[in-house]
Length: 150
Picture 1 (cartoon, rainbow, N blue to C red):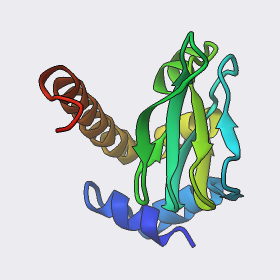
Picture 2: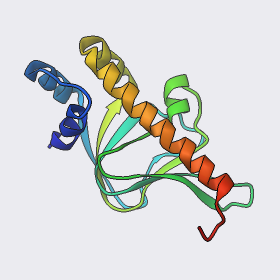
Picture 3: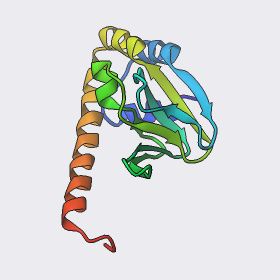
C-alpha cells in the first residue's frame, strides 16, 4: 500500500528495514473524492500529501472570482501549501482533487518526529523540495517568456 512512496524515497536514499517500519507506522492512507478540498484559503495547512493515484490541483480565486490553477500534483509526487505548512499561517490557496484520488498524508508534527528518528529522510525531503522549487522557477519562466498559444 505504501510501495509507491517507498520506491520514490529509494531513488534518493536507502532506508533500513527498521526505518521503513517506523515510517510506515506514521503514514495515513486517505481516499479523496473528485472535487473534494484538502485545503481552503484561510485554513492552516498541517499536512503534506503524496499522491498515489489521481491528480490534485492547487489554485487561487482571484479578485474577479475566477479560479486560477497554480499547479497540478500528479501520481508519485507531493503537494501541500509549503508556506502555510512551515510557517503555521493561514493559506492563500485551495488544494482540491481533480479526480478520485488516493494519497498518503503525513501531519507536520508526525513528520518532525520522523525526521529526528530517521535523519536520512531530511535529505530526501530536501531533494524533493529543491526539485519542486526548480519546477516552479521554470513555470514562472514560461509565464514570462511564452505566449498563451505556446
